[in-house]
Length: 252
Image 1: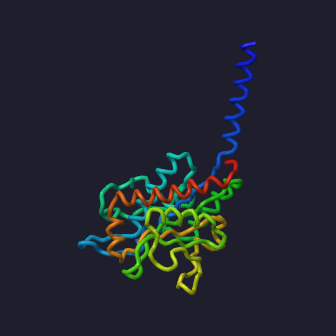
Image 2: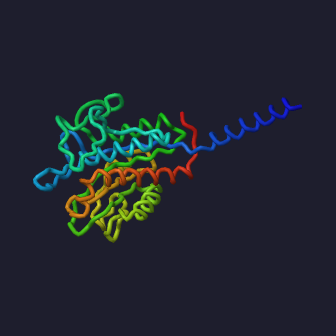
Image 3: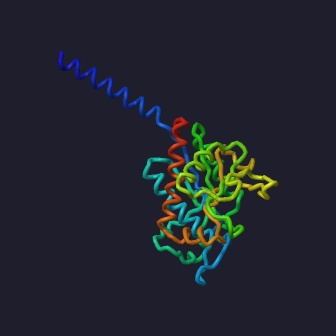
């Protein structure tokens, strides 16, 4: 009788574990570090030291990747350089040589072209056809000095931006502009059609996240603080984890 009871308990436990695994939300995150290689992005100077958008965007991307991997989330980056790691200096010197190349194993060498980035996203969407893909392109803005904080530019059908906005608001990192969340191609607010958010990118959840304004003294002091860059990554990761509660799929 005791063996029978133990057998029943073992079966029930197995069913519970299987059910939990089956109900886990599984998504794939594609991190797109803005600019890179021969395109440094925006550049400003702080005490005669160049603050280069692509360098800091890549550092935040590395931090976000690390957090998500530790949470068991499948993550890819559109650009990659194995020789570059998270930099815990506040002000980062310009990365040597060509900054970083596109992931050789997926989209080949050369100057990071937007078509290669969207092709990479589409490849992952095909490989993980039953999953929801989140495409996050990380940048820093260069705008009026009176504006500070993070700004979100979203694709037409994106819903992930809502979670991102909430987390940024909670941490008081959202832009102080009248419209902190914008649609790609919003002519009223002088937003162009961003290629990586357009039809060439087949992922449904896609955003450009501008984490701060390089012309704002407040944002610049944040950007060159490695602890704040870690906070940026943590906030994005928190938004992804909360979004995961809604989406269920089986990973191929």
